[in-house]
Image (cartoon, rainbow, N blue to C red; front, side):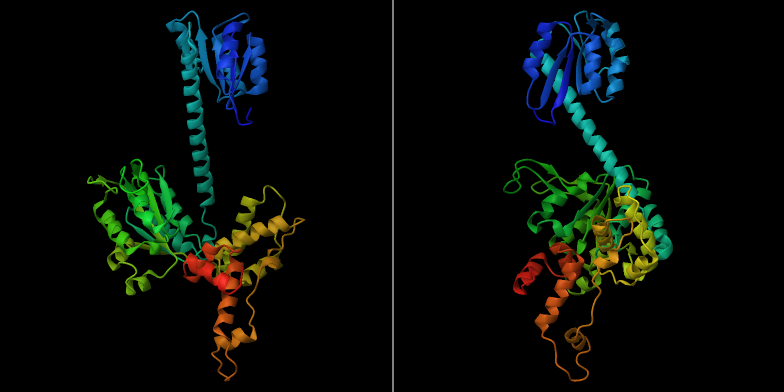
Length: 453
């Protein structure tokens, strides 16, 4: 029996019925137990907290409907299915009023019982999905708090509140790790459609040959492997907000279609002739210079201006070092698990002197590692930092040898720079590639070529 199996409890004084249902329903995913009285059944409810109870209305020591609130007291999520040999409208109403999930009348065949139990299991799964969704939504909202408004984000907070009141596109710019996604989520949470879907999709993570199908959806047979129709991300975000993160990675061919979505509010699935009207607030985020991309014809100029009706620039952490103490306190509250930990003033000052090339994401990474490695209440994240050092070769390269000294080999400078970037992102190739402005395949090739693995 799987430890994740659901539990079915049958409370019925009919021994043959109880054993038959147990034998029929027992499986790796469902454990069936039989009890012959109300007292025995309630004791098993207290011990097992069953997911489903098949409850007979007439028991030797109680009326079935009087047990319902007691059963639900042990586990409010239990689905109670009343079973009675004396069907009546009054019994059905009494059972439903007491919290019953379903009502069956004897004589029963096993397929009828199985169908009722499967309906209960389906409802349990759907409730669980909804519970997890609501938990994640509330947790995400809590984590979306914008920390450090007094230390450099005050103007941005004002922009966020203004952006939340309108439906115009928003372009959020800033270096990798500054919190652009959180800014977008904050706009959504403050908007009138905060109860509707919020979807964030990273354009850099989508395979280019599948990006159009992911965004616009497809019909059955539209391409090899399209075995059925599927909604695209635009349709999934209906009524809510869609963030296109790393919009600069979107192919020019798709940029034209995106421009059409922004202008006409319609989408067409791959393989379909029908247009579907959508109502989606579109935001975009990027860590690259889109104006430069426009000048190089890598990004459509008309799309750039269409996306940047409202523009919010998230400053890098090195430009708002006064936020660091508050950010550290907030992060520790979220990840410490109730441990009594603290940062000394000297530690905070050291953190404020560090340039933070990985921005807030790097700070969180450092704080979590310091927490894991600490053995007492005093954290020392500064010991995990690698401050840039001015080596002779690098110094001569940066000064372009004003004193006519030796020039460092390009390979040596490149190797040092990539190694430092990898260290900042804890060996994460994708983040390192984005911060250096190169592709994932290029960073992998460079690591192998320069023997950095």
